[in-house]
Amino acid sequence: MRIRRLLMSMTAPVVAVVFAVALSSAVLVVAGTNPLEAWREMLAYGTRLETLVATANRATPLYLAGIAVAIGFRMNLFNIGVEGQYVLAALLAASVGAAVDLPPVLHVLLIMGVAMSVGSLYAGVAGYLKVTRGVHEVISTIMLNAVALSLVGYLLRTQLLDRADTSLNLKTPEIPPSGRFPNLNGVVEAVAREIGRGRELWGFLLVAVVVGVVFHLFLTRTRAGFDLRATGLNPFAAEASGVDPRATVVRAMLLSGAVAGLIGLPEVLGDSYKYDLAFTRGLGFTGIAVALVGRNHPAGVAVGALLFGWLDSAAPILDVVGDTPREIVSILQGVVVLSAVVSYEVINRVRQAQEAREAAVATRQPVGATT
Image 1 (cartoon, rainbow, N blue to C red):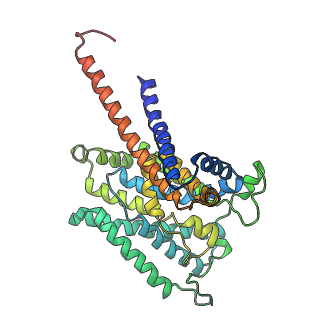
Image 2 (image 1 turned 45 degrees about the vertical axis):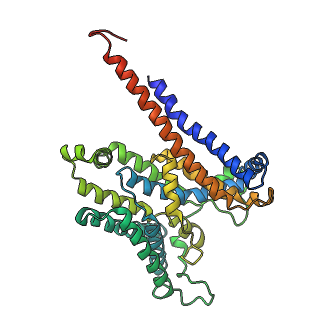
Image 3 (image 1 turned 90 degrees about the horizontal axis):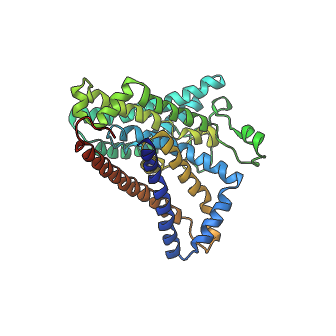
């Protein structure tokens, strides 16, 4: 029985990959590209050390975004506001980081604390509105996204603008070296070869790994994590067992927002050292897709983040393969999400039907009979 369940759990991702490759190949054919040539070139380009480093850098914020969304999903909360939470948190954290002068470790911890606090408090607004006024989190977080993005634009042009900079780029002052996160180039070069000038493996990757481990331990080893999972599975049964669903909703939104606040820090602390107009947006929405692909499990979210990061990093090669625009990668990512959702649902229904048949057979056995 255990082996059968293991095989069933492994079937879903395998089916998703096969279906995604087949459907993506059809999309490439429609775009006028030989799919075999495209996959071959993407694999060759995507396995270069420079591309793998870019994949890890891209996957780091995507993983944090996926975890932030997954925390809400485990509670049956749809936190669409991750986008606004991380953008606002990145701006304020970068501004605070540039305004203070502390020892290296304390400086980085302060910036991270500010980012997590801003994201948590902003997400908490949606949680508070849900439990006190019955406002659905989808509606409130969509509106809060608009408020956050508008507020970021206003602050970047007024209060937080680096007025000492004479360029046309709107940006905050740069964070001093004491507030920057060290890279992992030394680790990579110790086991492989030199990455190359101008390329860095962001050290914030380690923070993302820690966040994933803590999230898993929180869900499986703590009472608060049990309350969150129980309320997500059956809020009425959870309330009957003594769980306060209102407090659990607020707690889940606060935790989701805290993780969301970290999404922009890999770029701010490891690359640009400031917030400017070139800051990467859209990661919050992509995180929803990553969480869906990973089925809200930390390990699955990691696979989804690496897959999306690899597709983004390997996209430039499509420009020279049949003159295919790299925007086709966005279609491929959508196909991956569709494939994962459909395959998991199909396999889940097959498993439920199989368990129902086994239960029916067991109930028809004579009393005292053994299998």
